[in-house]
Length: 374
Image (cartoon, rainbow, N blue to C red; front, top):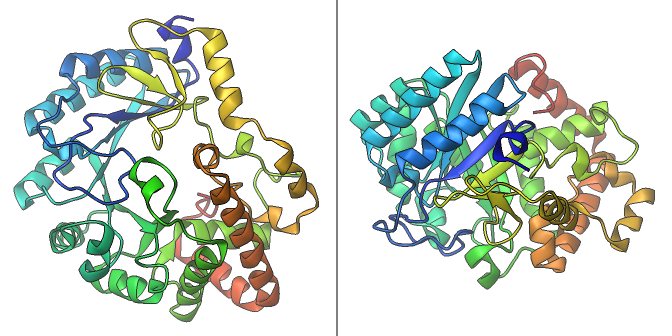
């Protein structure tokens, strides 16, 4: 399969610009290297942009800047990259977006203004107040400063918070803090068995549940002053059902790793999933793709083993995400924990339906129409 044909269904590409990072977070899923490590060349970026923008069947495509820490790249690189992609998109009648996931510690006010003028959409990684964040991560005060700059400029931004042993018992404090500094929506990822996360004590299903129940209760008690994305989605599904409402949700409807989404490292290797760049390699942007390898890799990633039989009689499938397939492959206990968490959350919703409806109605009032199942 030629690279041009491979990229026809692809809409979203995560670019791992570098494995380097100025921090050393204890659970880093890429096991980040020192900042001087090699970085993606602008020529490599332009080739990837050509493949995606020109060949994708989608009108709107995404080239996400990721790492490591993408902001160890210099500003001239981003200016040339975004300018090239914009001109290419205009020529081919496409729209291209550039999210960026950063630790935020290298953002000055001048640099932030520069990135925003380029149209780059900033997302932060932050686990709560600095005294909590810094247990597994670093430089919490600097991240807070960057977030406050965004809030002062009235610019929208994303935020990912990893739920781990360090903060699972403190989520009300975390959400109060987010509200205080101006973070009004965010998304939680459970600490997953990837990279250095394999060396950590993963959460049990009960710990996941207690942490996320605190998130739900905070949303209820504060009239959704801060909205967590996955809890919002679980509430919506519990009340309104799934969309497109299949009989049993599967990753076919949720995870599009390798189907419409891929991640590409600085060397041009294409992987099905950006959260695990150690496995699921599909091919290379220069060398093309073996159809057999692509099919076998995606089958191995998405195929359900007999464990899946338990799902068919489970009422909690109404709100279930069915876990992360890359994490499941790395640690089967993780899958069991997410299953246990989901069943506990569904039971809690069933026993507190009035509270769930209140959150559902409040979220619907605060979000734009059509953004309930985001």
